[in-house]
Length: 264
Image 1 (cartoon, rainbow, N blue to C red):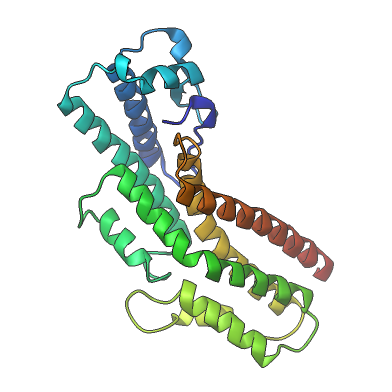
Image 2 (cartoon, one colour):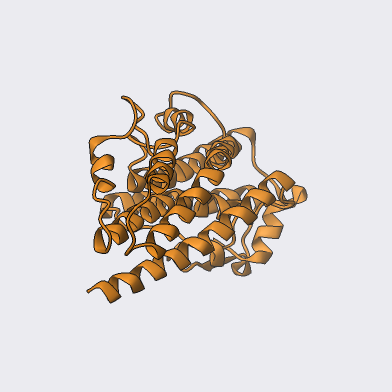
């Protein structure tokens, strides 16, 4: 379980009711773990940056110790249910932000079904499915980020057929309609204007936005994995790669903002 200082809830875009529910789930999870471990010492708890009560490093280690666990099986089941609900709420938020209910990589189909509760899985399995999506999109995301950077660097040059093909190939993999065939009319309209200058920058910005929406979801899974001890090798490799892509994404966004300023 993450310590309080490392618990960051993304509440942007949530209304008051949903915010309260998410905060409630977070507190229930912490208190459920504390109950099972019999934690009573104030040194076991602290308030995190999002305003939620969480465990200190000391409290987390105490909770992880088998000798301290006092819960019955029903308590464990209830804790797992709350943990799943919290994770699912956060993932649904990222799915909404990215428009991934309607468009996205084909591997999102199973994740959508799980979030719709068509299949019963554990919170650990839910995290596995999110990471499974990343494994499938990591290479296409790298291509998308490279394409966006090329668009920006060639903003004043005529667009080549090779570049048009690269854009459509990346979008067909990462943002095709789940129901229907190929890209939606809305997506096609975003890359229809191939003129140099500002239209080219706006196209690059759109592609970077899609990459950001994917990587935002994996920031959440990365944060969960950082507190898995020991970290499985397969997760460590994905974690390292997604963090590298997040760093590239940040650089790409800043370069696009600078370029927009120059065009103004």
